[in-house]
Image 1 (cartoon, chains in turn blue, yellow):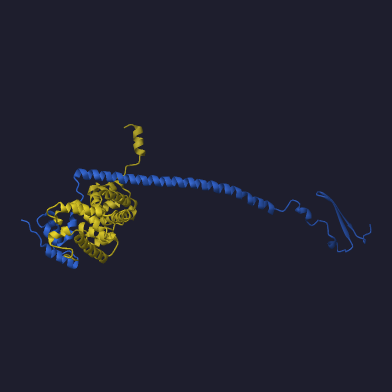
Image 2 (image 1 turned 90 degrees about the vertical axis):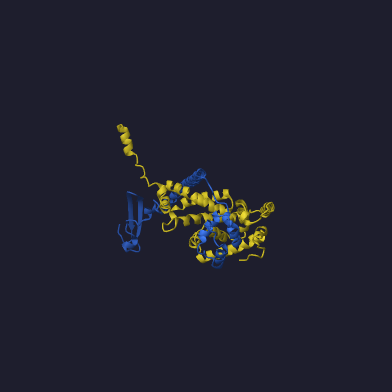
Length: 168
Length: 222
């Protein structure tokens, strides 16, 4: 005994407030299995025809094959992504190595410059020669008419002080 | 077992502890294991969800091969984004959301290369003419698929998704809202507009099928 639902009432209720009227789920299950009231149901709601959109119907063996091929395909995609990432990393390493080499060579070039600057900053070797002589200057002698002569070089030098007031 | 074997087995890292058989775990536990990088859990997830996802994508796209491609990418995305999965989320909703987004992207990319549907209509008219009784109840699955594919191009992607998820997959409005990332009221609006458009266009473009119900072009209005 098949109890075909009242499709007109259900469709009208559904159309009115868009919610699913009581018994709608059971009615749909009935629609899927009962060929007797298809015409009436479709007259009430033509969109029910889309319940017959192809469903994926697989035998257990077909489903098992489908799952296996899906697993393999996903595994292949993951492997491809890993290899791609590894390739990217290898590429990155090549670039990094080139960058390090460039930096090192630049660094070597730049190293020289501070040294040159340091050398330039050091006073030249002849600088001590212009230092103030150990011999008392004429001002230190406090004698305006006096003259000081200095001869010789490192290790041995002679200083002469000549002043007219001195009695030589 | 000689000494060498003993040393070898002692130095070998112990195998990972065996998880409970994956078939007995819930979807949530499975996704949590996937999040930890457990590959067997991913394989179990694939074995559980391949069929429903294939069905959903096939209905969205109207093409079995394209559906298969989208489902493959869905599982790949699940793996790639596994660390983003929050255990407070519904596993089904999360997976359906990924699949739906990919299917929508696929539809968008297809739109530009979509050919005219005139051949589809011609074919359907020939089929209809060749039958003594022309009505919706006698349409074959492939014909229904062709009609849906044609009519649904007039829907927005969201409208199409809502119609399929709500009407054909039997998901609730809150679930559909979560999958599509919108409010329930939006889902209801999309559903209302999708139904209205599909009913009108079905009866306008295929009056030969509506004739069986005594419905003309103006016989049905949403």
